[in-house]
Structures are given as structure tokens and as C-alpha cells.
Length: 287
Image (cartoon, rainbow, N blue to C red; front, side):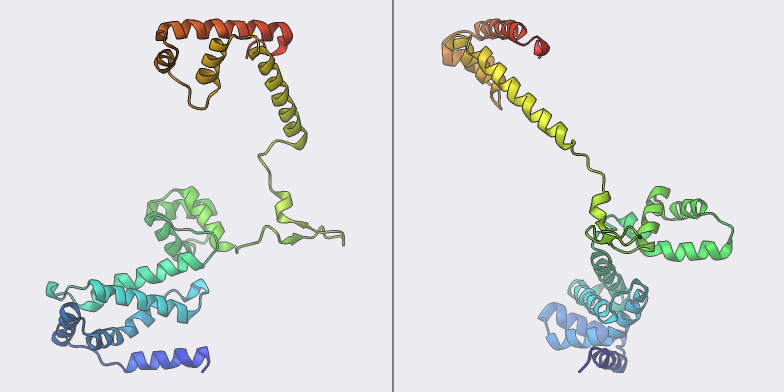
């Protein structure tokens, strides 16, 4: 059986399913909620499959398979059946409509593009309403500029005009691979789109220069540290060179001296390092 014939069979079965009267619907909902009666669930869902198909058809312009939209709508229908409270005197179709629509919309947002959009309620509303509002505005006043259209849509949906412009550009184009070749148009070698992206990384010569400078400073600092006595060296290493610097109090306890004495030794050691570095390497005396 082909996908097309399967879809037709599904539609025929949905259309042939009998409508449920309010009392019958209530009894079936109670049987499913209280007793988990699978037959009752089947009757409820089959009676409302025409609602799923009708709602899925409203989203066919997003170029996704109709069968997938219906399937996702059916997932929403089952979710509605699981949450429905028959004692609230609300028809099941009214309650289920929101869950069916939400399930279909979530599927579209996940699969329409490899770049996820509509992560907030405002963005989701913009995604699903922009085309309709844009067409209505263009039909009402063909002289409207792009900026004016975006501004009016932003006011209607409560979003920023910049967000409308970005979403409009996304809906107008398609996904493109960064590895897609771009020809120079003259029969020469083609380049990837990736080659034209601006990188925030330093240039190779700058990276090499930075590495050399860091190695040189490390050597200078090592030579300067050799001029300190063991206690000064320990304090400087644990206070200034460790990832989590030790406190004056903890070092004082470890060395058997007061924290004020630790501070004095640290300041003296820093002065010694500064003096050695100023003599050997004047260009980094301020570090």
C-alpha cells in the first residue's frame, strides 16, 4: 500500500466515524478516565480524527508531509484524552483543539528548519502569523514599504520590528549548508560558504607572537622567583600563582605566623620580584 492510498484510507475512515452525542461522549470519557477502557478511548479518538485532519490541513503551506502533520495532531489528540475531565461539562472537541494545534505547531517548529525557531510564545506567534498578516497588509495597501509592514506586524503581535524582519528573512529563504560550493562564475575553482565567514580568532602570526611572548614572560618570572627565599616563594605561589588563591589567615596558620605577617612578607616578595624584573626586563616592569 502506497503512502497516498494509506492517507486516503485514513481520511475515509475518519469521515465515516460517527459523531458522538454529548451524553455518549461523556460516558466514554468517564470510562476511559476511571477504568482505562481502551475501547472507549478508541471511539473518542476516531470520532475526532476529522478534527485532526481539518486542523492539519491548515498548516499544509509549511511544505511538510500531510501524513506527518496528521500523525502529530493525533498525538495531541491522545494527550487531550489523557487530560480531559468529563465533569467540567466541556465538549471534548473544544478541549482537544488546543492540544492538537500545539502538537502540530511544535512538530513544524522542530522540522521546518535545522535552525530551531519560535522558542518563546511571542516568537512562536510570529512564526505562524507573519505570512498571514503580511498578505493582509499588502492587500490592504500595496504601497506599504517593508519597514512599515514590519512595524505594523510588530505592533499587532507585540514583538520588536527587528524580530519581524529576521523572521521574515528566515521564512523567505531556505537552509543552506556552509559547505555548499560557491563558484566564481568564470570556470575557476569554487569555494565553500565557510570560507567567507568572518572569524573572531586572532590571525596566525598574532597567535604565534602571543605564544612566544607568554613563553618569554614565563622564563622571566621563573628567574625572578628563584631570588625569593622558601617562605616568600611559598606565599607567592599559594597567594598569587594558584588557581584558587589561599587566604592570609590559612597561610598564617600553616606557617605558624599571623596573617598580618603573611601580608608583610607577601608585599616584600612582590617588591623583590618587581625590582628583579625591572632590572632584567624593563619592558614588563609594570606587570
